[in-house]
Image: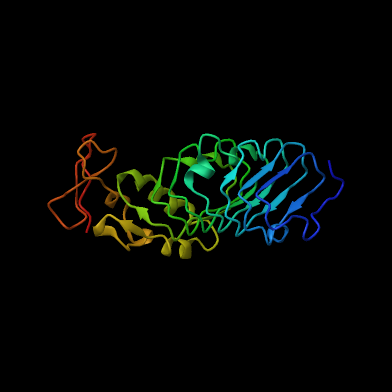
Length: 245
């Protein structure tokens, strides 16, 4: 156990590969604390620490132990350019779900490809969420119901697959960003990467009915595969969806 509240510069050798911090009085971790640690691949914080702010920007994290943040007091976690994937963040042993005091989460500029429905289970205190500039194409319905006071949400610049599985998110986005400061601009930077007929289309220029699937047993509107237009057929529940212009 250490009595220091911050790391002294140069505290770690540049060949450090594994770092474990247990029951310390350290309250802040910033990117400067890990400058010059190109070999760091394993980071472990155990319960009992007083860390409230963690900034790991630019560190290529291979693994964060599932118990790394358990019992801590972290309210801000930043890990941009960390090479984080869906499995590293939202896997069965997710370290993220242990940060129950979390209020600000910034995971921009990573390699996340999809967001599971239970991605933020138990993290109801989050007020700021940043997932911009990842590779997110799919989002299960609906991980954002976990939040009770989300004020700032940024998820632009992702290659969304705008099919029937993402229709709910289009509707959610139009509703949420109307009330968020700068939301109109964020919507303009949210575009579809696929399917082909919607590629490069802005969310703000689309109707939710255009988020359709070709499979007849799809959970939403069924696309008219014989047309290049965004016309859709009756969905699998027998509900007729009117053609869009």
